[in-house]
Image (cartoon, rainbow, N blue to C red):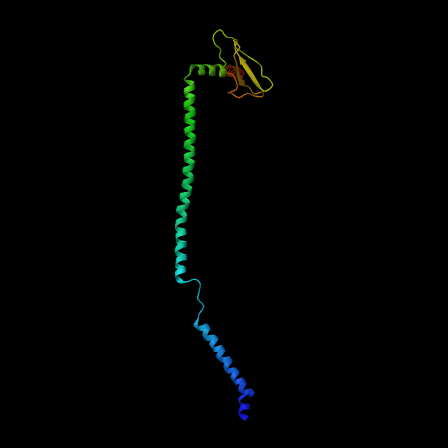
Length: 172
């Protein structure tokens, strides 16, 4: 019985528990030491990231130039198309001016000319600021007249002539 008591004595039990605890701590430390923490960023991954960043930086300027040049090309194409339309309009206008009837109509409208034997007269402006210029045969043309101060294109040629004479007369 003495051996049983010795075997289960408190000191013996504490020694056994201390030894077991020390072994557990030692094993836990060894596990940590045996499996060191691995970094998520390996050397290969860092190199790959570096290469990708270099490519992005190297391609950024050429891509910006490409995009700006494409925009400039589109703008130039739009301008070319606009100029082509303007050339077509001018060709049409040139063809109209080759027609004697069109030339006569423009002269009668803008310069208020009349044919020999016709009597031209100008009606006063009506409520909307326009006047009708008529010839003795009844043909009427409409021309825009400003109520306040008509611009140089809105007035007949002979009014410009008389304004010049009046201005010359006023000078000392």
